[in-house]
Length: 483
Image 1 (spheres, rainbow, N blue to C red):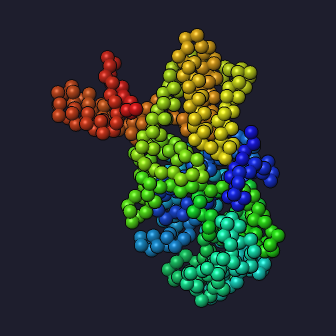
Image 2 (cartoon, one colour):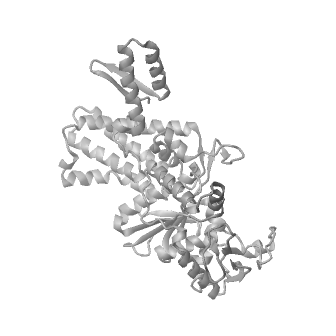
């Protein structure tokens, strides 16, 4: 099957054909690093991580170039730095490190390129100058603004009509703007804010121009796929198209938005217990906190449980079911590993490996159908059931068991799950968690030997809080996380 993706620009599912199959380019809007990411921020990197895995399998690892930017200059970053009395670099370094640690916990692979805004100021200034030269932007009072009326296809991505937007504008227009929907490419910095020199005065870039300049500088135009959350369609991605096209003098009506990106993909919103996340409600869930209390694979599984374009409601039932699903899969792997203790999968011959590879087809078909992860999960369980049936059959050939196990883990790898050993999973999937449990068990032995029953009871209660089941045996105690 050929990969088909729903293209936001064309409002339909389209067969994916890269401009150059030897150089497939993907750009996804990354974090603005001023605070810890919330769970909604985690959906795009997880979704597009699956896409990257699929593209690399199809076109080869070396043929796919994935860029995810880092916005490291922004009003919120400035406010945080001012409040703390530190340079913006100290704030951005701290929260970028936290973001990358959280992504690692979710088994999200690192992008090939992670462009930072502050490393691309020259490219941004050059692109702004190109837009001015094309007659699509103007300087006014230290600002440079994009003239939306100069690009007739403005609104094509979001489906908004430019004339209607201008006529229906209800926002207060700054005195230096020609119309309400003109947006900032460059703006003057305040005295205590980061600033860079430019032909229009010292200042810093606007939000939208950053991505356009970084895309062109690192990937070239047009890119194959641009991804991000549905909330970025307007104005961010709409503005990106206008800038990216007009920077090269292509402001006329015949110039298609595809000159900037050939395909657009957007993931749906995430709610919490059926409500929009909001600080005023107090239901903002930080990813950094979640991965301290549960394996990252549980969070990842939950994020992939709904089709990426559909809304996803985050709740405890979803997390509990995600944990149970992974417990089931890891349980099959644990039993398969016991059966395969004396067999190495590398002993399978070429014909056996080809058959094992063919078993991936149902999962691949689901993912190639616009990243249908719910269907891919269902088919993953089909592979799991097939492996379980072999394990239950006393007459099954051990080589078939080995091939089935390989198929299951290879398919799971496309979704970015089953990355641990079963032992690691059932011990909590966290080295620090394992160390705490084993220290408690050692203290339990000491307390029992000393007949310190109060301390033994305290340790028991703590193990219960950790959801740990202790199994005493003649050679000592073993443990696992409660399923």
